[in-house]
Image 1 (spheres, rainbow, N blue to C red):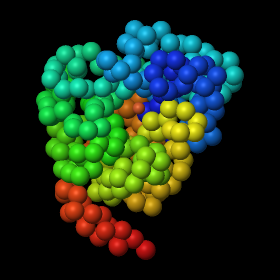
Image 2 (tube, rainbow, N blue to C red):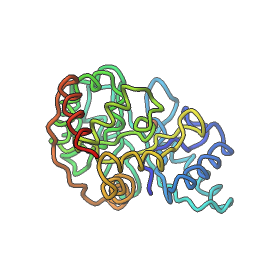
Image 3 (tube, rainbow, N blue to C red):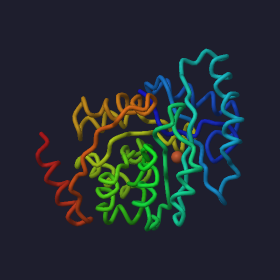
Amino acid sequence: MLDLHCHILPGVDDGAHDLRDSLAMARAAVGEGCRAVFATSHLWEGLFATSPELLREEFPGVVEAIAREEIPLQVFPGAENYYAGGDPERFAERAVPLGEVARYVLVDFSLGDPPGDIPEMIEAFTRSGRVPVIAHPERNRRLQADPTPIARWIEAGAVIQVNASSLVGLLGDSAKTCAEYLLGTGAAHLLGSDAHDLNRRPFCLGRARERAAELVGEEESWRMTREKPWKIARGETIETTAPSLEPRSGARRLFRRILDRDP
Ligand SMILES: [Fe+2]
């Protein structure tokens, strides 16, 4: 598998504290069945003192240490770019992409109210041939109640990444229910760990892939964790279709129907 979302760079955000943590996380990623990860530290002005320059400086150190320890894990550069709203053009200009091919960009936003101009932000990327990957919308309280905007974002050209930890229940019932709904309706395209450490926010991608297989089938579960993340690394197109989503009560009914179909 290729994990497109984790906080493995040491000492830059709330992920790995030091190189020892980074190496322990690298071993854990391999243990979960990952051959590669994108290092996606937070770029979140005001909360973390990270910058594109700092991430570029820190990146080679972790790659060298992993090679020195002979851990069979490839690490690609990246970032989790926080969008606060208000200036989509400037945001798209400055955002740090996933990997060297730089076609995909991992984006997150507030867990409370999503910015109102997310469609404009998506357009700012698609105009220049890039694709925003929306990180963990299932964690957002508004979207848990009404996930319908996600369908519009997919239509506008975004792809959707759900957290492995949400799907296995480590981030609470609401995130889990919403994650299951997004997978069940085809609104989730990718699973990423969003691992920050070994305990509180671990990789758990293997376990989540198995849970995903129960919801979307074995083949699609591998596409979400292997085939599509590698497409991101190579800059290839991920095909999407905007699903039909319903607000929470309707969402529950629809999800119930999906579950009822399962043996
Ligand atoms: Fe993250």
